[in-house]
Image 1: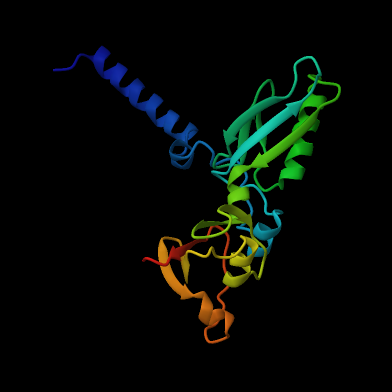
Image 2 (image 1 turned 120 degrees about the vertical axis):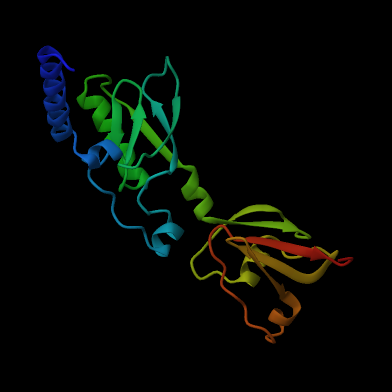
Length: 213
């Protein structure tokens, strides 16, 4: 049998727990960033191709601060969180989600100067994910291999020519891989107008096959 003192403590604990539940709604407990503004909708392909799309959640960014000649440039890397924030030295969280890299540079510089930390500062913001989104990769029997700049409306043949075209050891076919799906194309037939020349997309992988395969 519980004593009145124990029952009183239990009732007080229940009342306190009930009050705490009201202070911390379920949405806030499950998502600590729920109160922060939402990011804009995804950018269009044109924005991605021109490098003007806004920064978005999970983007990897490198911020370089050019404040004093004595200290030299300071580089900091972070990932844009679910509410569009990154963390930087001395000024903590700065919201860059929804901004282009140029706009983010201005916001970061203004934040440092308004905080009185620096009288003058130059900021460079680079998004590694955005760089990858604006390129396609080439491998196999190609004159040049690696990443090449993507342009809106670029075709497979144009992409191959930009990479220096096939080597003399190529058999004339290339494999285009997009989102894990691979398709083989005969470049000789495309050049002769026998087959259509497909459009490529950012992050496509083009592999030129050798003659012995």
